[in-house]
Length: 178
Image (cartoon, rainbow, N blue to C red; front, side):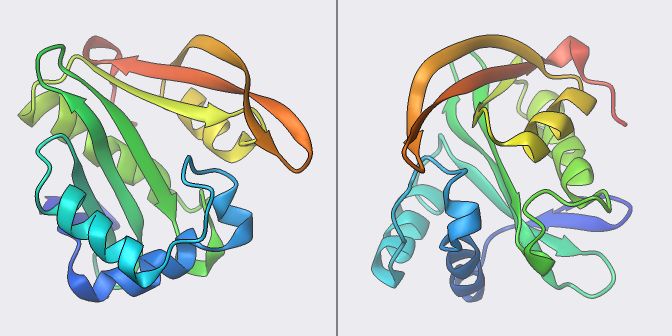
C-alpha cells in the first residue's frame, strides 16, 4: 500500500473491475485512452489476468479514499522497460466522473506513483502520451514538472478530425513532490 494524505494506492481487486470498466467505457473518458473500444466484461477480465496479475511490465493500483476506502480511480506504471528504467504512466479518476479532478486526488496519486517508481523501482524516467485535446491531463502534468519531449503529428483520429499527441516525461532528478 502506498499511503498519501487523502488517498492510498493498493492492488486492484476483482470487485474493482466492474466500476473501473464502467468508468473506462464512458464516452467522455474513452476518447482519452489508447483503447478506443468499449470494454466488455471478458476483455476487462483478460486485462486483469494477463496484465495486472501476470505481467511484470505492468504495475496497476486502485486509488482509494484514505478515510472511507471508496474506490476513486486507477493508476499505474505500464510498459516498464527494466533495462532502460522507464515506464508509461496511466491515470484516471472515476469518482464523480472527474477524469482529472480539482481536489488534488490525481496530483496526489501521481506523486505516490513517482515516489514509488523513482524511489522503490529505481526508474530513471516516467513518460506518457496524451492527445492534444486532453487539456486536464496536460495542465496536471505541466504542474507536476513534466517536459514535452515531442509531438507525434496526426497520431489519433477522433470526432472526425486528426489530433497530435504529446510525448511528455519526468526524469528522476526532476521529481519534486508537490
